Length: 78
Image 1: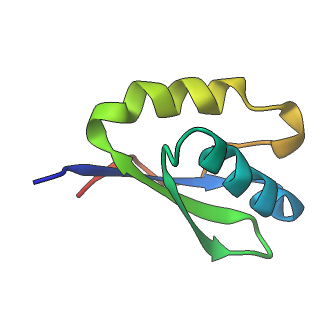
Image 2 (image 1 turned 180 degrees about the vertical axis):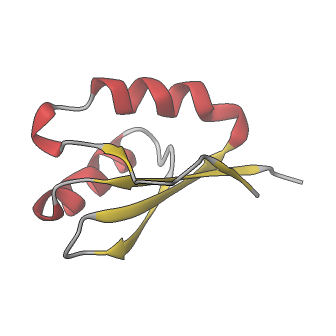
């Protein structure tokens, strides 16, 4: 069975669509779900074995997205 990891992030609300396009460009590396579009709260779901690739992508994102972990959000395993 595929083990998934989840991460809750905050990005600039106007950039949610752009962030989704970036994920699609990386062969759908992760699934993006918007939790609160006014606050820019989103959740990423991705295969646990791709955690290092997700980390690398998040570290390389342009500063205009201002991606950061949501307060009190820990990486989840499902």
